[in-house]
Length: 78
Image 1 (cartoon, rainbow, N blue to C red):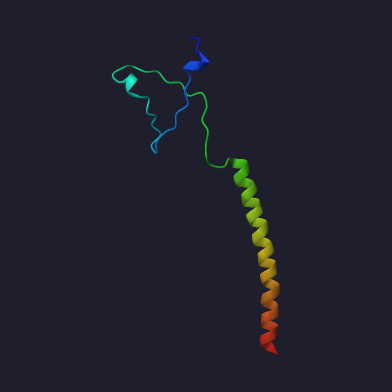
Image 2: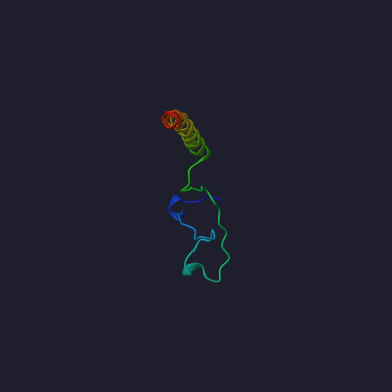
């Protein structure tokens, strides 16, 4: 089956993944092909990079806190 590019339409789904085709398709049998799916969320690589960055940040903050904490405890001993 040959499909003309002018016949292709892009629609957004509702929160349950449904697409409204329009009243022109009421009471008709419709065959739909999904050509591409775009996601608004981050992909796995972006999530992995964000996780690494957060982990490194947490480690640096932990080291900084250890130093400040040690200084505070030493100050109490004096």
